[in-house]
Length: 413
Ligand SMILES: *Cc1c(COP(=O)(O)O)cnc(C)c1O
Image (cartoon, rainbow, N blue to C red):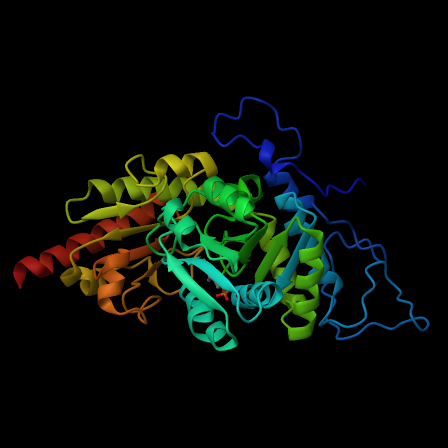
């Protein structure tokens, strides 16, 4: 059996027309086969869960397997199979899997920064990333400027001679603001700055960040990649050999590798990632359109909508809109609206089969002072929706009935 290990994602047309045949296997095929082969010892079609701390060595300086496994903090065959799959799907040579998305980000920061260095990060970013950069790494002499990365000029203006890393996420959590990856990638290249993109919201299937100048792709596999609300995990992908060696060293030194069972669950989730994303995309667009037309909804933020501020840039770098959207209702109705939802669950996670709703003001972004939150667009009426895999019609019906319940109660009050 021929192993499928590489692809050229840059060859994937960004428009859905898909008239020309793909030059290499499509993501849907790669997600199932890349880096995977039957277990040589048993023929098991899936990579076994190598639930072991250590590996017997036949002699000093020798290992039994090609992978050179000795101890599961450094490498493990199940984790390696996951990494081969992630790398092959993205079309890059290297991937590393971690226990959480934040363990991956921590490793990236430890591996690339030292005291005196400067980072530029998006002012609307995942809360955990902000906490790491603003609170923890500051104690080690690393400074960070948080800027509106949707304005490439603001990023250029924030550059300092000691800037080593540009770290962005797009679409941003929870405003769905889009930054221009190609423009930022070009700027990073000119200034010799490492460009890392947190691609958790879309993954390389929808947004091939390496085609737009990224050096590192960051994934919280907790979200779409594993996709079933069953694990926490993270990954770093890179096309830079020296950086990969450094990241590998730091992961081993800090002990943040993914566990074999969680790696196996993530591998299983990956098989359906492109297929699931098709449904997430389709439902999210339908729901965004429904919300946009609803009288009680004040604003909808979804990159797939033509009137989204970042739509034009999104259509250059995204293959589809993704499964995440946010919308605004009257802040006085938020509590009742959430209480009236039947199918949709209030929870902090995203990217899973279940439709989940989050209220950033008191949940994910509660630590940001109210004035600052409002400036960033994280208002008291903003709700973030992770559109699940239930039938689109049922999700819309749930949102519709909850909107009318909150409305009725308001009118009666
Ligand atoms: C969840 C998330 C993370 C952190 O991942 P964990 O697996 O929760 O540690 C980082 N970035 C983004 C965009 C996320 O959504």
